[in-house]
Length: 126
Image (tube, rainbow, N blue to C red; front, side):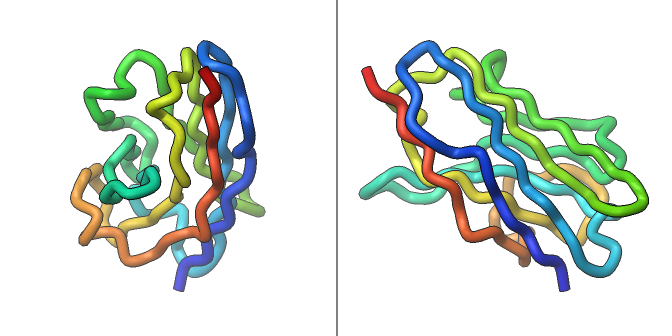
């Protein structure tokens, strides 16, 4: 089992920045690729970004490329996933979810992520 807890969401004006964090724990959580997804009201969940187990490979949705950066850090105590969001737009408003795969390489397929966090609200005002 892998447990995921997000933090860092909030309200920001358009053009501003936020950084989301996701603390991962559980057996071999640091050995898996991880990702961020989001869901806006009335819309389907969509892929945002993913990172390989090593951090050497990343993948972004076209809508966030150049504005968002996914990264991860690992030490002996914990494995943490980050999403740095810059130049935020009102259309970025959504609940953001951290997720973990059980594979090494990146994927945008939500069905390949069996572990999910509880979500963190991001609201961008115009």
